[in-house]
Length: 158
Image (tube, rainbow, N blue to C red; front, side, top):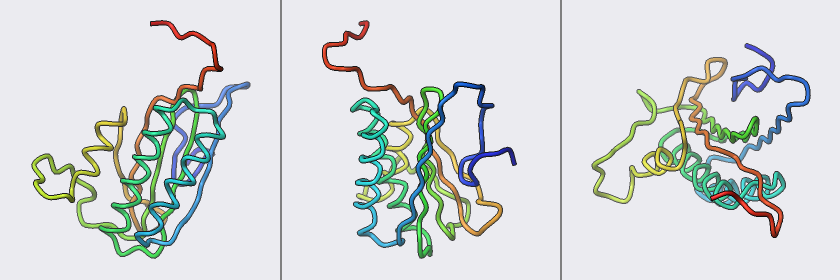
């Protein structure tokens, strides 16, 4: 594998002057860790000065992916990695043991469960999953545009 993270394979070559930012955290696979994942994601996206829509979408996506890992796998910990490169934010969540067939969209779910991936699908420009390969578990990832916050008074084109 090319240089980069085991969670997030490098998708493009870094040319000189290209800024790539990465942040990784691991939490116990307990329901209360979902709130911690949201807090860590919000703090990091704030530090990266991403616009509010991107921050809110990232927090929601992390929340849904970590929830899925906690609820649907026999993991003892969940690892999350945020990567910002070339105007994109990539979120990857790795569990330690996945359900057969991996995550699936449930478009006709009538109960309160099963809608998390529909939210991820709606909020991201792309998402998917794959076996971790080098370890047990599965990695579920999502990408979205990562615009920098405009300074106060700066005008955006219509």
